Image (cartoon, rainbow, N blue to C red; front, side, top):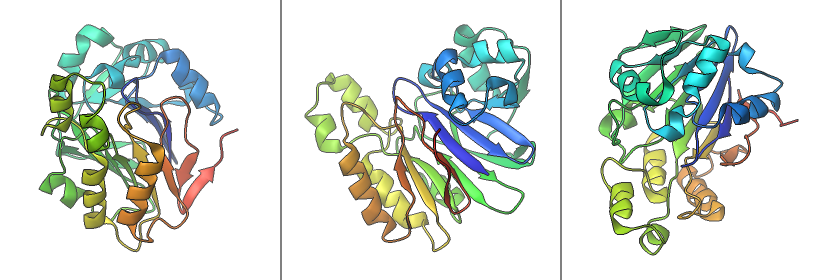
Length: 264
């Protein structure tokens, strides 16, 4: 199983999941043009996709979901509350596969285990991806705090895409209006670097191979801070594979053991 982050941040989020018999997106918050362009860096096109999984209805996660679904006849996989809340933005689509948060489903050979996350959306979720070879990868972004459920679900992973949204001091002293700062720091907002690090310390084991830091604020965070904080939390478990996702360019593909394929 290979993971590539096409782009991540408040301007748009999308990730590629590829395994034997399954190639799909997690969210489609970039423009259709950008998703197509960035898939090409992996030698793929939207024609190669089987589905788009939507974690919640915010525009930075669904911007081109409707366009891609109609253009390439792709089914959207999400829960009823998210689909209903997304309709005004994405419009009618050729197919929608309803899932229920808490119940596993399969896309090709990948078993997907969605779990609830605290965020200001209709029914948001993170997920665990289980490959046929037993490898487990987690997606956990757009979380106001790390719940006990998240800590339980994120055990025993080989890889993780985890939100490192903001540095608290930078956010407090930054340019955002106070209500937005309160939203970001609230229980339905986003994880800070420190909160993400605390979660990591609780879940990382000797089998852990790679981490992608994601949903990074351009205004309220710095890459050096993120990587320093993550390295301390991993305490040697990162081996050689610690990446931070960018808003403007895709990451390399990361797979078994670490970086599977550099960007062409």
